[in-house]
Every structure is written in structure tokens, then in C-alpha cells.
Length: 276
Image 1 (cartoon, rainbow, N blue to C red):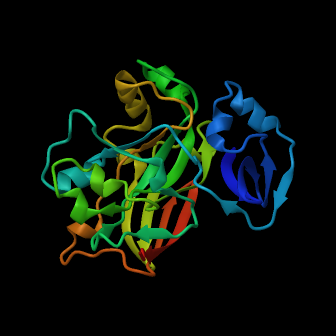
Image 2: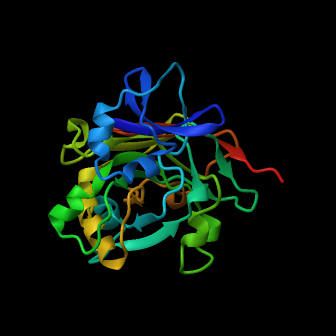
């Protein structure tokens, strides 16, 4: 199944996406919907109001309690940089105000001149979980989505802590939907992930190359803190980011940023420079 949050008449609604229409799930957003312990059955059996035509996608999770991000998590990229594979995940966080919808504009903040792309597989939690073993961690995953961790490099590297460069407001597209973990489209070992900027393919990888896969990340994070429905884990980006190029390349006002994951979908966002 594909589940999403769409904007309708000045509010939002949680929906199931069926080809060219959406079926209302009875809640204002997907985070609220996922708090039902039987959300999967409710979604499969929903027969609420139908929305047809062009849909206005909000962030797939409008106000998650947590957005946890992972750095340095693709084997090929780590090894090509001459680094050793990490023994533990590198973690940082992002605030909900950083998120935008799959087709919304991405804000290039006036304070930064080095906004970079980072295509990522997003994991959405569907059940509360703490101290999870492998099977509990797998069962806690509601599904997968597309995310781009657009990053202000000039702010990220001001200190050894990355958060300030990672969570500028309205910079992180996510969506357009989550594909539930039981869907055959995402059951393969690896999925092709690509990022395009103004028609140029700048990143291409396979999610099977992750050092710490989604299940391992859920288990690890659940040792630190309780994960709850609607939480997002951004699993890391492969090589090809603009900051590492020579010369460096960054997103510009008007740049078209397309992030695509096989079996899930794509985000397509125009970058717009912030005006004050």
C-alpha cells in the first residue's frame, strides 16, 4: 500500500493512494493514523471519501516526534574516501519544520551559500518500540519513503556538531507517500536510488550498499530512546554530493532537485532563495 498526507481545503488528511485517486483514512495526518495499533488493517479496508485529480502532497509525516539521520552509511562511498567502515552509526537529528512536501519548493536560506543535496531512503516507524531485537525492529517499520537531506555545508562545518547545517527550515523534501514494508515493491535486497540536479544525475546507488540497514538502525536507536509511530529515520546518502566535487557545486535559485527510489517514487522540488 501507499499511504500519504495530502492538503485539502486548508487542512490535511491521511489517505491511501489507489492509482489516480486517494481514499480518506479518517485522520488529519499519517502520524495520527499510524498511532492506531491496527493501522494496516484500517488502511487496507478504508472506504472513506475519495479525492481525485491532482493531489497536493504535504510532508508524508507532518509533525513527527523525531527525525533521526544517519551519516557515513554507504560502503562504496566510505571505502572510496579511504575511510574504514564504522562500527556504530553516526547520528544527528532534524526538526519537523525542516520538512516540506514531495513537490513543494525547497528553501535556500539567505544565510547560506553552500546548499547541497543528499538523496536518502527514509524509514517511517509504525509501532512503539524500545530495546528491540531484530524481529521487533523489523515489525516496527511501517514503510519507506523518499527524502533529500538538503544541507547547508557552510553551517554544518562551523563546528564538529552537524545539526545546525542539517535543519534549516523548509529544506528537506519527504514523500510523496510511504510504501508499506510488506509491499513487494520494497521487499528486494536493494533499491536503486538516484538524485538529479537540473537534469544531471549527480548520485546513483543501491540501498543494499548500506552499512547499517533499516532494521539494524531501528534496533540501535531503540536502545537509546523509544521510537514511536511517525518517527522518521533518514538512512544516509551515497557519494556524489556537491560539496565533494572539484570545483564544488551547490544548489542555486531555480535549481530542479529530483530524488528517486525504485519501487517507492520521487520527490521533485524547485529550489528558491529565501527573501527577507
